[in-house]
Picture 1: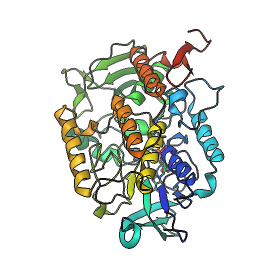
Picture 2 (picture 1 turned 30 degrees about the vertical axis):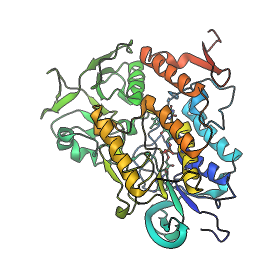
Picture 3 (picture 1 turned 120 degrees about the horizontal axis):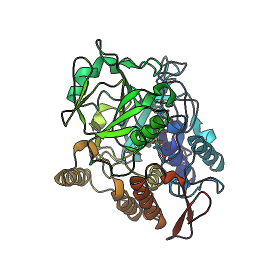
Length: 461
Ligand code: FAD
């Protein structure tokens, strides 16, 4: 606690989630001392800081962002923004990634966040300490260094910690790959070789293996045969980019076959079930392919290497648990892991989670007992499993995100998102599923709390 009796909160990461945390902590000087935001890189924005290079920064640290050169957002700016800070009016609904970075910089300007961010500072450890007084008899020692040679190590004491470190960027696929993939690719994936050289599939094969984290642009894959694994948003987007450079793409995925028009040169296949010694891929239906490139768009994983084991936060496949409301380890309720849910509308989700966290810390929402929170987590996970949801999909909230957001707003006693938010977001999802090739030509205008209209780039409804 600060000398003025205010709560000191450390924020790990200056991506969208960390900035949102800082913005709201700063808005409550009655209760909170100015936050300290630790950011490993020299920039704010995390994901939205495009790096042309792959592999490592000049200082040897692994590149964080998976942004690719031509990415335009897949969520319209009208609902992608933080609810208290809209994107500039003149922009189209689906903006280029550079506009999102600018937007986050404007957010920092507007809410005067810059002075509270310590750049080039890596959080190396976060450990709970029992203290008399403090929040719930608990405090946190946060040790930071420069992240490179681990010099300039210092430790500071905080009442609470908000972990906003995004998804893991290094060796990112190894943990997520299923058994056959690990056996085959373990060695290549540990290499961290830039995309220019790509990963060698195995000693006999000419094929190349890469993960979408290292994808920057389609040109290096022009005209090549590609098996692209995973039909999530990045997978589909990259599929379209590859089609534009005449790559022959087999889109391999485990969902129901897509019924919308696909880009030219793209065909679908069921999941890859095995890789033969010569690098041939075998699909679930028995068909085979020997692509020049095997591209993983299988997502990312979470890691919290700095977190004391004692805290007991586990990462299993894509699930981070036990976390009450996907945020709070029941045994250490002044630690908050923000932004682990997937298939969500991220910025407003961070906004709601942050406001809820503040309501916990300022006492306006009283958390249940540790035992009750543990029971709640257990029951919630069991209920999802009973609905047939695999472990790796438990954090995918999808349309349930709106009920989740509303629940946090109700518990925390703050204003929920305006009604149009969910319904515009969900409509965009429907447009995208129907017409992945053209949905970004839509533009949206919000009329009031409930209503919005959609038109094309020329204003035609
Ligand atoms: P990040 O942006 O990853 O930021 C985490 C920050 O923490 C980084 O700056 C990192 O350097 C820092 N950090 C990590 N470890 C440490 C440490 N130990 N010490 C100090 N600092 C640390 N969302 C949308 O809303 N619309 C889209 O169109 C969209 N497209 C996307 C496309 C791609 C390719 C990807 C990968 C994501 C996309 N997203 C999109 C989701 C996007 O990730 C979120 O919008 C959001 O930017 C995530 O923010 P974050 O703060 O949680 O994490």
